[in-house]
Length: 182
Image (cartoon, rainbow, N blue to C red; front, side, top):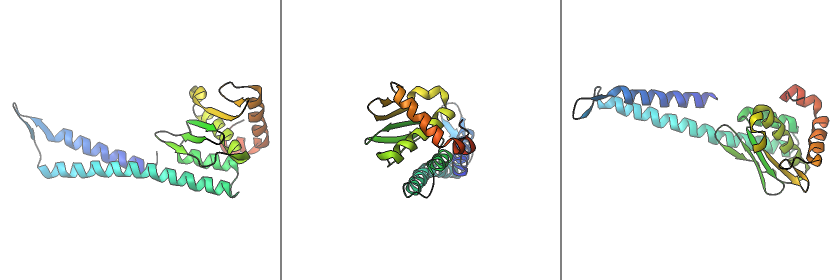
């Protein structure tokens, strides 16, 4: 978790605990043991915590878009791109259909990737797929790559296996050093 998320969770926890501690059951009525101003402070902490968590999520989308723009212009390699995206939000799943969809799924959110066509998009999707499998091997079947006819993880044909091995061979040194994939 990032610092903003941690701070947001702390704020939410403090506000909820304050609300819970402040309630007392007095027979027929639920009352407050502390002044109402304490409830207002708890409400401010609650709202602040929500804002921090939501802002962090929005901020992640912007960071991922910036990383993709750097990749599109050739400033960073596809392996470095996937490494940086995974640092922003751990890749749990990927959905890629040439020309239609390119999305990665993180801890809580999905992030649409604007690269949907071409060799750069396919290489990036395959590398994201490898990282998603490394991060969450139990979710291997939820990942979907549909690159072309006969090139799909849904059927896991020989074509997609060869394509994945080709990408692994092309970036073997970087995959091992930067992503820990052999």
